[in-house]
Every structure is written in C-alpha cells, then in structure tokens.
Image 1 (tube, each protein chain N blue to C red):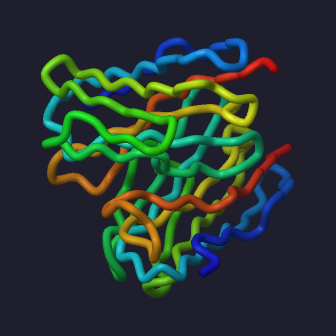
Image 2: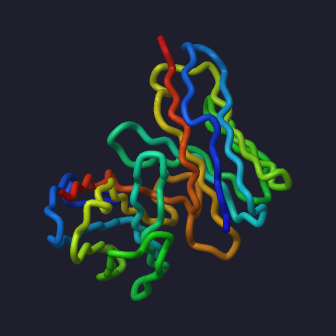
Length: 112
Length: 117
C-alpha cells in the first residue's frame, strides 16, 4: 500500500527566506507526483505536476524535484512571501491507477 | 468555465438523517472523485468514477453511496448520517482543463462542510 508522508507538519519562517518542503513515498512505481496548495476553508489548487520520467518542474518561484529511487520529492519556494502562507500537500498517482494518495500536508506560515 | 462546483457549502445533520452532496464539472473530464478531509488525516478517497457508468470504492467507502448521473455530475449520499461522518467533503475531476498546463491533474471543488450532531 502506497503511503505518503510530509515532514514537517508545520513550518514558520520569516518573509524572504528560501525554504524546502519534503514529501516521501513508499512505492517507487509511480505515474506522477503533484504538489497542491490549500488555503484555509478552500479547495486544493494544483501547483506542479512531475511525471515519473522527469526530475523536476518549475513554475515561477516554485521548483519541485522528484527522486523515485529514494522515494522523495521536494518543493522549493524561493524568496517566500506572506501570500505563500497555506497548506501544501503532495500526492502520488501509481502506475495503472486512477487514484491519488495524499500526504497529510505541511502548514506553512510566512511572517512579515 | 465554472470548473468543479459543489452544493451545499455547509450542512448540519442529526444522527440518522440522510442527505446527498452534489458535484458537477464542466471540463468534460471522464474521472471524478469524492474525498473527505479530517484534521491530521489528510485527504482520504471515498469513491471514484473513472468514466460515466462506473464507480469504485476508495479507502473509506463505508456509510456512503455514489451515483455518476452523467458525465458532468457525481453525487455522494449519506443514507444514515453518523457523527463520525463530520468532515469536509471535496469533489474533484481529473483531466485537461482549458488553459491548464498539465494533463491528468485533479481539479477540486470548494468543499462541503458537514456536521453531524
């Protein structure tokens, strides 16, 4: 059974810092991995999607990497801003599956 | 495009009451999903529908039923609500969206906050 873990559960940093969020998964036979953002009281918004054949994806100040062999992904946020405060979730889709398995998320607070 | 819409946004039920949560998407996606989100538990899949006319159980299907009414609509029914079903329920669809950068990503609705007393 695929398990997805995100550490830490919560992170608070001052504005302007670069930071890394971590995601690990137990089954390396993945189809893709996604990072989502969830604002309080809202649904999830997809930030980045990395296919199993890719090593990283970038969107603006966000960069996600994937290392299937070690079962790890990281989300790098450069020059953090208070507007980046949200919960970030990673989710894995296994090969041949229609379903996503989610981590529990990291609640990020950027302090002005 | 409205994306994924859910109704109602909030609901309070008494134990034993029934209700149906509605979900619709206008992106012509084949796959649709129902999740529940609880503190400390992340998102857990209740049921999903890979295409019109098919449904499959997810991780936590007990106490729920679903109907894929047509390609656009996927409803979740609680036949006899229990306090353990107090949660936030999210519907999602999967596929390409106009202007979206990726294939096979999931698009989420705003959620239904359900309290069972």
